[in-house]
Image 1 (tube, rainbow, N blue to C red):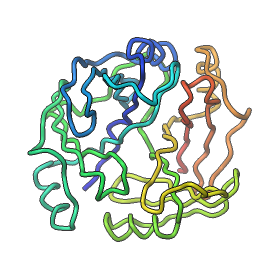
Image 2: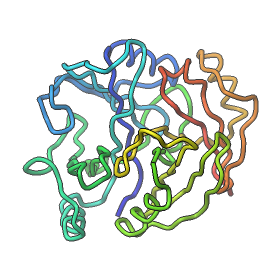
Image 3: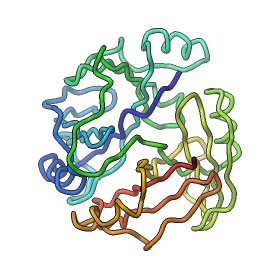
Image 4: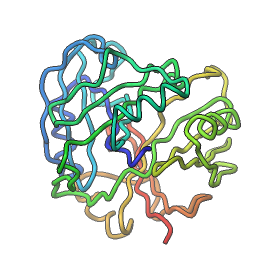
Length: 273
């Protein structure tokens, strides 16, 4: 059902500043945007922009209500998954017990049809289905990093085994690996359809909710991390290490230093052959 991750959505207190950051740091192109009416996902309304770089996209949202947002920082907000037929997908997911917000799918300024899940049925996480316009599933245009796709969104969870079981049971997921994480705690990687999620149980879960998954990071796929690093550094980005590490599912991973990525956790990823 799920073909790929179309984009990660971010909240920002300053849309223009964040758009400029994506243009400078990733060579992104502003594909479109504008005013947003009040909605389930953005109750106060606001304005947005779709930044396109490599073959991926990021939706940047400046809500009218900026309570809780910090100047110079972005906060992960939602994930958009691509499906071939949004109406058919909604029917199948409704039959499984999922609920959806709003009266029906709507079309955004990019010509994409969207429908948000009711987050009470998705562990408190904002997720939407996305049907791309016919003939528009082409690579995005950007002069910066050659991002091939988004490999996964990462979530912090209080109970890793319970979270893995949720994806296995509800999305016919397959646990493909995991174990002790480098920062303490445990993690797991679950594939479902053609997408993936990384679930992370921190060493200290005090204060975390039993049934809410917290958005943690996004993994961007590139062909070669070493060849990407110089370009990224020339654009003002820095990394937490000089070389990538290899995780339990044989992906090479190198995180950006969050002080250079508007406080948001992102990593470059090279997939195994």
